[in-house]
Amino acid sequence: MTTTMPDRELPRTEPLDPAAIVEESVRLLLDRYVFPDVAAELAVLLRERLAAGAYRTQEPAELAERVTADLQSVNGDRHLRLIHHETPVPEGEGAATLALMRRRFDASLGGVPRLELLEGGVAVLELGPAFFPVDWAAETFGPALALASRAEALVLDLRGNRGGDPDTVAFVCSYLLDERTHLNTMHWREGGRTLTAESWSLPYVPGPRFGGSKPLYVLTGPGTFSAAEECAYDLQQLGRAVIVGEPSGGGAHPREGYTVHPNLEVSVSTGRAVNPVSGTNWEGTGVQPDVPVPAAEALDRAVELARERLTALSSS
Image (cartoon, rainbow, N blue to C red):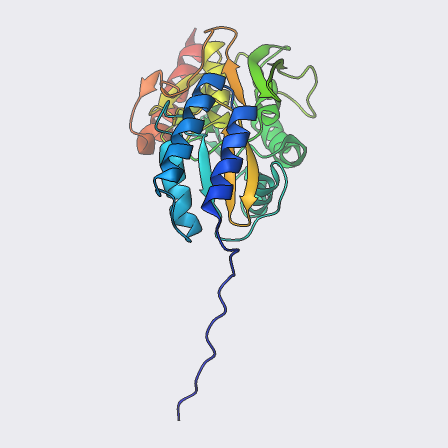
């Protein structure tokens, strides 16, 4: 006896209107992209490609791939993308990104998958897969950093952290410094205007700090991106941490997302980071490690360095 199973109902997608999506992407670029001259160049390129039929498809994933390739063809900005979402996402500025971040937060122990004290007083703290919005992250990051404050040395693992909220970067750095410190300056573009905002570590954190003097090592790799790169870069430029691993992904421009179709989100870089020490950032180059090793070996190497440093300190 055989039973005929009903066809599985697949998620429905709204019919694509590539022309409308491209035109809305152009409008957002011209209004919000941090580099107006590049935005104008990209506007011409996307409209030329649209007229040539390059975006003629009814597959959202295919359209996203084609448009993203063109968006990144001028200056290689990896935050500049048309993102395809398998599951329909909410409308509104930042709504798609926030919904995805919430799912990842709930599935990752609040972004603290590992906190461990190793032999010799070396703690390992992994933060990932993102620097979640600070009003969420404080719930988990704060207690984890407070616990790690008891260690003699700390290894902060950001190899799988894809970025997130710059305010969370300041929150994390606040536990790793002794006093209020200028971390970064952001130059934002909004409605054709340029706005400037400085980022500082906090004068107060809930719980004890690890502080600004004990040995600190930060692990990076190709999977370290955006706000996670800022955390590593800020601490490196301040001379606070030793970076161990491989160069990071190279995305220094904070971005905002705009839903332009139930399954498509335009990601536009709306800001530019300028470090107060270096006067520049890690865009395109990534954060360069002080101790270059394959990312897979970075933890073992950092723990080895931490133990060597603690031994040297105890004998001095």
